[in-house]
Amino acid sequence: MSSERLPPHDIDAEEAVIGSLLIDGTAIFKITTLLPDTDYFYHEQNQWLYGVCLALYQRPEPAAINQITVAQELDRQGKLEACGGAAYLSHLVSIVPTPLDIEHYAQIVYRLAISRRLIAAARQIEAIGYGADPDVDASLNKAEDVLFRLRHGQSPRDFIHVRQVLDKYFEIPPSPEVEGYVEPITRVLSSFAGLDELLGGFQRSDLVIVGGRPSMGKTSLVLNIARNAAMRQGACVALFSLEMARDPLVWRLLSGESGVNLSRIRLGLHNEEEEKRIMNAIGLLSEAPIYVDDSPQLRVVEMRSKARRLYFERGIDLIVVDYMQLMQGDGRMESRVHEVSYISRSLKALARELNVSVLAVSQLSRASEFRASHAPQLSDLRESGSIEQDADVVVFVNRDELHYPTREAWEAAGHAGEEYPPPAQIIVAKHRNGPIGQISLRFVPRTTTFENISSEEPSLL
Image (tube, rainbow, N blue to C red; front, side):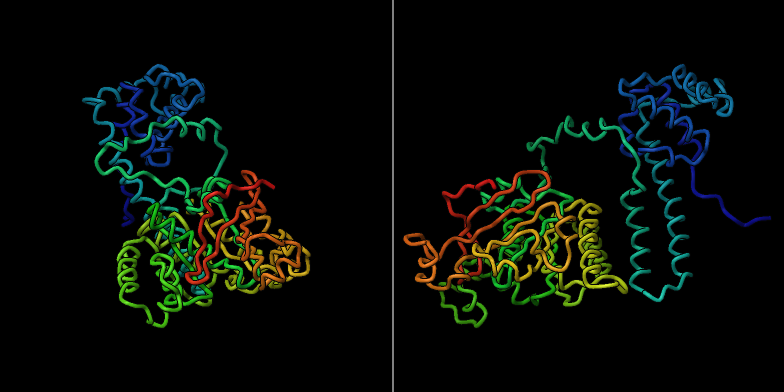
């Protein structure tokens, strides 16, 4: 006698769900979110029956769901007799005391389906273990993939009708007047007015590249954006700092929030009034949902694993990577160009997988230094053309004061009478879903922060 146990299932609950739909077909809208496909049912006949109900519901002009329409559709598919015929449909109707409890029955079906998937996931992880891959991190990442797909119901994508995408625009959102209501963050705002106007905020699933030559303020800009998003919008930020250790990074955040000179914070030379501002800023930043990882040599597989873990525990709205050329690919690559291309593709895949904005800092080549305007271009993105290809948005930071370190040099370059030091240029050189353009921000060296220029509006390119 075989000792193998049957997977968890409850035929009575499955039949009660189908029977409830045959009595009251309109009840299907209550359970489609919980049971979006037929795989949640264990019994094959019930899979076919639920599939027919879904098909009737998802038609461009939804058809009524009842014994007659379900029987007709099964007969058209040649499955009516295999499902037990009209007699089985009558049986399903007869065993349901009331269709009002359909959500309770669906919960049972859902719970047991997840249990079966958990068993299947355990077998997949077991196979990974027996594979004895010499790359332990790769094995752990594969195992996490299995559990991630299970937790989030991910499966290979297939064609869907455009109506399914459009339907969400007609959903009625919860009322802000409801107690405990928290407005969902659909896009992350930088709080730099011109940039937010140009981009509409950083959109979920987008890869945003922030590029510039050394000392232009790339890190300062992304830290400003991260702090603004967390402090003003409540966005959860995962910050991977490969170049800067956590202490100096937090000092920058503290200087920006308190307005106290960064060097005075770093050296502990602040006075009593500044100390009050620092303590107040510490209290505010301590409550901000900002999570910092300062691993200096981070592989793609490790970053993906850490981001997913934080996503499970806290939810993430924005991932910041400073900077991508310091990341390492997984395994041997033919060249550094191939490695950076792999990193770029992986960051874009992570943005889509977690449905978050990924803001990655990138170094630029020296080409811009030999141009008269010194303005960076997309071709300056260092080591890989795929960065430009994979990115949804590319933003460049350029500060002319670094090219013209004195007022005399600035005026000699044809800018007599203009403001000095000139404002920083924030150039949106690529915007997959909108216009490109340029805005100006004022850079404050003592706090290494950028500030809005009140009258500045984006100029389209």
